[in-house]
Image (cartoon, rainbow, N blue to C red; front, side, top):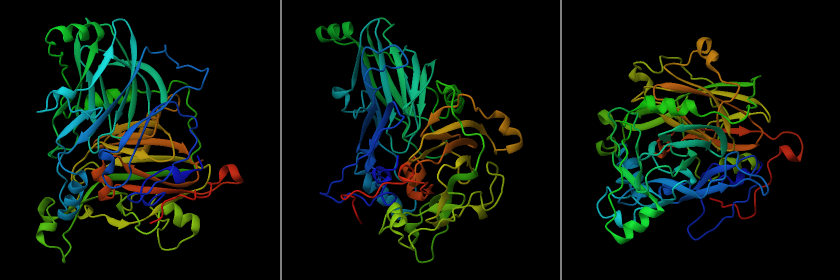
Amino acid sequence: MRTGWADGPEFVTQCPIRPGGSYTYRFTVQGQEGTLWWHAHSSWLRATVYGALIIRPREGKSYPFPKPKRETPILLGEWWDTNPIDVVREATRTGAAPNVSDAYTINAQPGDLYKCSSKETTIAPIDSGETNLLRVINAALNQPLFFKVANHKLTVVGADASYTKPFTTSVLMLGPGQTTDVLIRGDQPPSRYYMVARAYQSAQNAPFDNTTTTAILEYKSASCAAKKYNAPTPIMPSLPAYNDTNTVTAFSQSIRSREKAEVPTDIDESLFFTIGLGLNNCPPNFRKRRCQGPNGTRFTASMNNVSFVLPRNFSLLQSHQQGIPGVFTTDFPANPPLKFDYTGNVSRSLFQPVPGTKLYKLKYGSRVQIVLQDTSIVTPENHPIHLHGYDFYIIAQGFGNFDPKKDTSKFNLVDPPMRNTVGAPVNGWAVIRFVADNPGVWIMHCHLDVHINWGLAMAFLVENGVGELQTIQPPPPDLPIC
């Protein structure tokens, strides 16, 4: 709150930290409890630069569930056998989709199903009769993931550092950027059980990494036996099909806030954002090899037909704070410039968005509702949309085109989940609400990093309110400059 300089995304709240340079992120944790994570926010560096950020209850306070015997962070990652920066550079050069990853990882280890990696497979210990807390984080770069533990049920108790009403499930789905806290009981015969993650792929005909990463849930008694004799092969769970959207929907609709939610009801800013891909025609001065997208085009992406372009010489927050002109405009559209059948057959004339660095201005304290509408341009897809600087309530989700007449009746204003990343359903929509009480410049973007590069982002400029407590603090002296 009020320290947007510590947010991190390059050219939004700071310039990147130079090679050999350093910068200290100073901020106060307010109102969040549970599992978050930290990661690089420059090009594709977060592919390998990330970790868990765990916020425990205050001293003297406890979890709103029985204290687990032990806690294990489970970081789901994505691995390329080459430098990921080269992968994204090559894609930028050719205009094609970047090469898919070679493996997924759990706590940085791919596991038993890849050649050469099984010696270091991650092991999560458990004892018969105990209840443990798994803090699951999807830190993959470009892929929503299913997660499952063989023969064990998982009780969800938190998501994105907000507590939820507990519910039991056999499978989780996390988009990149999302976290889910689950309790797991050692109630099965002592043995070794695979914990696995693999892709949820909602975009049709798009190539993806279809491999499976594994870790091992190992009962202590089984661990002793395994050391004496040859360890038995762990038990493997069955996973949902790659494109099992029904399982995803059922899972996300089960997540509810633990307490009655304070959802803003009188809305000051009612926004409607289309989100999706696009294709740019090959510029006349480009050679053919630079236009290797479908039918000689280049891939792009946009919100409300604006493909977001980051500035290069100043960060947005710096230029706002110092009144530097010409870095951005504040005319991001509140609605799509053109209404069309968003999830139907879209005319090819609507595939090419307009590039721009457009922000949307919000008055301090305004109550905001955003409808995030997926489009079928190029392909419909589940987009994990992440808003910086805020948690928000997800009050409804559905399929097809959002219809204010019929769909408002589905709004949950009682116990909607509070999150910082929402999976906008494939060929569907999600509605979120928040109060703009954190001044600064905050980017909202798809957390599939390939889509950020293509421009699937926008930023809010939240103005200062009245007095010091409603005003962003001055920039720290060590803020990296361009």
